[in-house]
Length: 150
Image 1 (tube, helix red, strand yellow):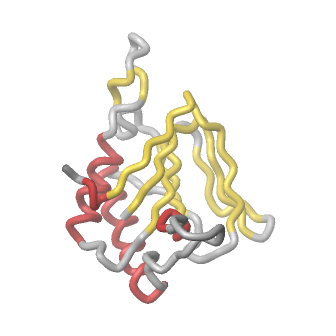
Image 2 (cartoon, rainbow, N blue to C red):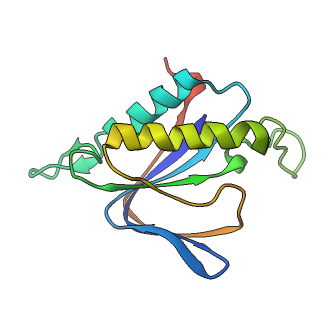
């Protein structure tokens, strides 16, 4: 699994002109799934996201997690995180999972994030043409790949 995590002041997902989900202070997380992803990856990545200390404490030092500040999480599926760009100019997405594998993994990831956050998280719609708006705070943007845990 690959994730791009952005600390945001606010973020929203719009589909066909209608706001599907929106959050205020928290994390916007784009996630890409590949066939090698496992339940272990889901647990590890969720724990990493929920406990990432990227929010400022009283001394303006990034020492707090999204959970500690009672922030929100907006999760958006994004197969393009597995784009291969080594050859040519057209990205290849052969490592991105097809929906029959990716949807159950995505749904399990939602459940794991909600369990770790101890509250509802917000989502886009898997496979939909989504418009994502955000105000990146910092800016802080972090890329994590579960295949690079060590």
